[in-house]
Image (cartoon, rainbow, N blue to C red; front, side, top):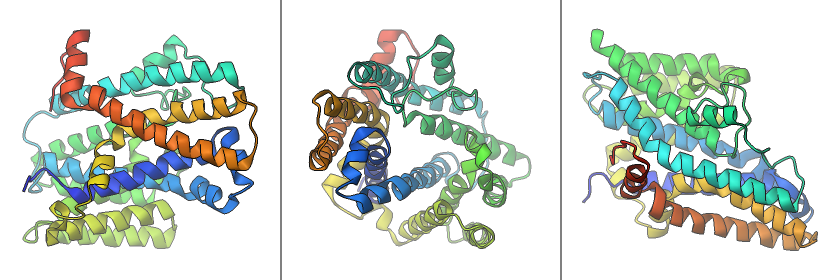
Length: 349
């Protein structure tokens, strides 16, 4: 069996990415308003709760970061900066292409409808902030609904890398990570003004790291138990559904790693495929949702049933475009070709 293949991770990513698409379809544009007339409960649920699926990505990202950089719970021996730069370059090509698609999609949508969901034409400063993954930190509006997460993912990876590197001084790398996670759970995540920064989300990310380390019965399970108890205590003090979901995903990953299910279940090709393209779907779906709304308006449609049909078409079109995006942009070989054409040095790892 391929040791790098984790069907359960694919399944989590597949389901979470679909929920994010459905959340945005239920949150933006005239399609959502029209569809709510015929299915208020369903549309309302997707609007209120489907966005919590982001927690799945946060936990999985922490799990995979610990697996890659500290598989046995050790400190990072080398300099963190090459790893951080490599992470940026790995994200950059798909991210930049997604920005181009978002700008083009918004420009076309503006021709057909006037809606607050459509981003304004970008300024040079706004584009520069996006290129640095600092758009939200610097106060710029995002050019697409999915781009904020890429910036947060990069921040979280950088913070995790620095914590693991700092841990080499006393051999307490997991201690630093789990301590930061605990602080985030009790304080940072309770302040919504911090949601442009990694520290707001590090509780979920740290739970993912703890889930990986919990696979080592001999040494680090106790730390996983400690942070799990801390997460429960944080929920008792201030219940947040997002943290409860993150904890449930982390526990499921820890159990599956110990039991062997992580690399063997579920064997469903559809989930494997959707998990594989989940990052691409995250990047490209919003412009397609905007265009579906714009076409609905352009054709002068208003019937709730037709709106539901358009939402379904937008959902399917998002998956189709994400498939092409993954094949021609996101895959390391494809990103490498694009980077070479642009004269950039980007790793294929």
